[in-house]
Image (cartoon, rainbow, N blue to C red; front, side):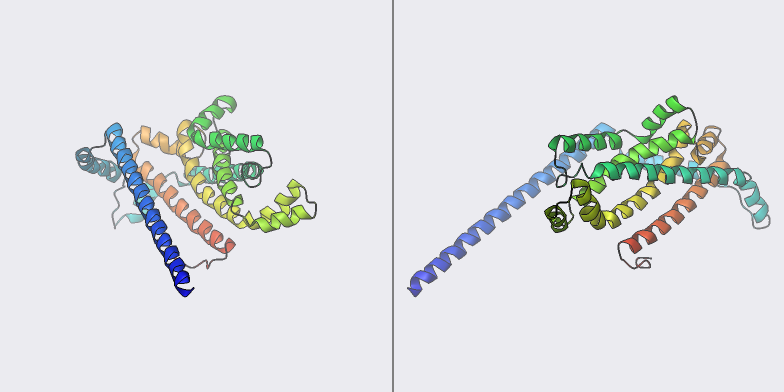
Length: 296
């Protein structure tokens, strides 16, 4: 009887070893397949994009020469006078910078509200209708696939030049991006609160409000703040097509070869973006319960 039990245990161990080795071979095979596909994709991208290391090596110094040409000439003896001349338009640029910040903020708020409305129906575990789920997913894909510049051009044609078109473009693109992220957060929530609210007769909106939203809200806020950083930079770029903000004056300076103005505006944007990044990072860490000073 003992020998039979030992044989059964050995058979099970042998079977387990065979299945484990088969699983390892399968995983290695798929790893090789993925690496091969990645290699083919990289090679194809290099061929299509005409990427050339020789051109990169010879072109980098030219790019640096252009950047270095925008730096002002500062002297120790006349430092403050040189800086004052460099930032001759500081008041005007700060006004445009505030406009850019407000464009990013309002666009993020509007886009976040739209994303919040669509994310529940775009979550596979929360949508009760497959058609509504499909439509919501495809709508979010459309909103985030079309570039912000294209939306800005459309809204400029419809509403004219100015920051209003830029705000709408940012809001639409933000809705698509945040909607997908919010939906993925929803799909990872704990199902037990959902079942509890449903068990006591809660309707679908009540389930979203009482069971899903409290779990997902910190992640919503984290993604919203991250998108805020991105949208401030995006608002500066939209000025190229006349959608308001400091990017419009930056584009004029580039076209007119006003090199010191280019570096002055770019430095303002870099400092502003860094400050926003630090502030949003601190708020995100506090929202998700991490030490705000960690990582600094």
